[in-house]
Image (tube, rainbow, N blue to C red):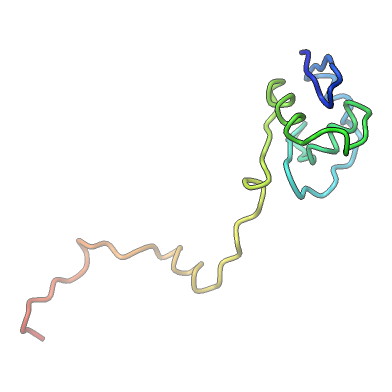
Length: 112
């Protein structure tokens, strides 16, 4: 597939991207990420490997657009961020669930 990254045209193919990322250890993800062969890579790292350009020369959006068109699963920085940690009380509440309105006892006014 032909795509343009940092004003340069590239012919990219899914199997070639997978082959070029074999043996490369993923860096810690702090922004946009892409899943390649069950490993999660930062988009900028993949862009640097497949284009042989400096990371400052292209945006992560350009690489995300190209990799998505190739069929890779990409995650934006917002969706890649972990959920905030729960307190033990919040965890227990979530496990117990909310009380069902139908199961709650009905109290008559003036009684009890």
